[in-house]
Image (cartoon, rainbow, N blue to C red; front, side, top):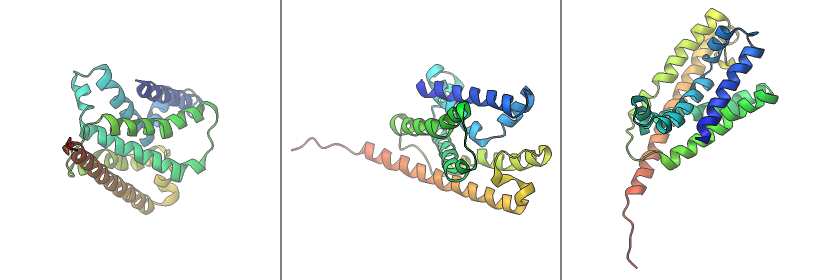
Length: 208
């Protein structure tokens, strides 16, 4: 409940900041820009995964977000968000005030709480390695959409996909690297899931 509340608060705050500072009060332009960030899309998935199973567990979407494969896919997305931010993007800007609050929740607090939730509460030992390739559909769709959106609007949410500055061959290389990272992380998380599942199934010895 706390994680869900913090997640939605950060998302609403981020949208308000985009409206105020990035689009001069244009709500539609702000919405387009808001949904252009993989970070925010991933945080929306985290917020939904932390909300719907608690708020509406018997609904179709509540059950969907309870699925271990779905929750693990979201884990892969939010881990990539956190890692790229801290390795690549953090040094490019210095948020202050409410921007710092939203930034910290989206890149530190939400990922940390979601990792803890996954470790403690998601059933283990049910995932198949093939799922890692299904999980690529979301980042692949973003990899196709974002450069096209940037070329049409002139707005690139991340510098490593800015085709006007880097050239589209470099953008393609960067996107390929990210897809590889998603694949590797997905396979790693499935390995962790299967390992934890085996540990849980091991019988405990009651003998002296």
